[in-house]
Image (cartoon, rainbow, N blue to C red):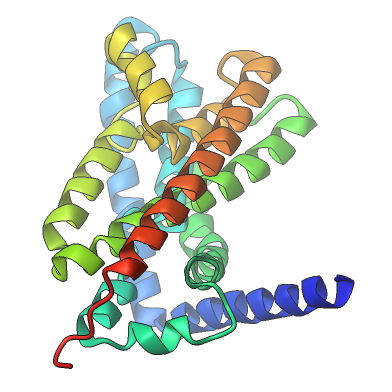
Length: 272
């Protein structure tokens, strides 16, 4: 039993390493992405700070918290990655997914492990650059408690996992649709708007914020780790946010398993 677990861990680690190395080869794309995120960080930050200059705060966020919210959010965009590369739909369309299913690694485990490797590379590159620029250019709000950093790290890992599983479910729709561009667009629009990417969710009406937190996984992707980082609501609130992310991860995995079973029953090899 222990040998099987160790072997499975080595395989998943190798897949994560492969995902890391794959994205490490795209140096120009990495630089361009970090530069773009940094530019939009200035735009978003100045807009929110201009509002805070009039009102003193925005939806309960002080100016320093807004700065941290924007720049850490810009850094996390590529780490969480709503619009990650979708290889699986193309492999379903071509029939190559059959070879994936013959491998000794579960299809979902393969997808998530590779995506975790991608997120690790993004954390070292696409996250560091915007945050460093924000620290140099603005007055950052830095967490007052050391345990906030640990909670933030856990929250980011859970955000990556929840988003990865959700994108896996979106990719599985290729077993029915073959072309998932429409579904992918709906996912990107809804997840971006509902996760705090465009603005902090507390600016919305309370009832809508509650619906988003309770009824969708979207706030777990970005709003939760950002609220943890700026210590909104204190340590107890941060722990509740991380627990909510863990719950959504469990729900997403259960849904993904169900969809995967249904999808494999409908597997059709195109052309034969």
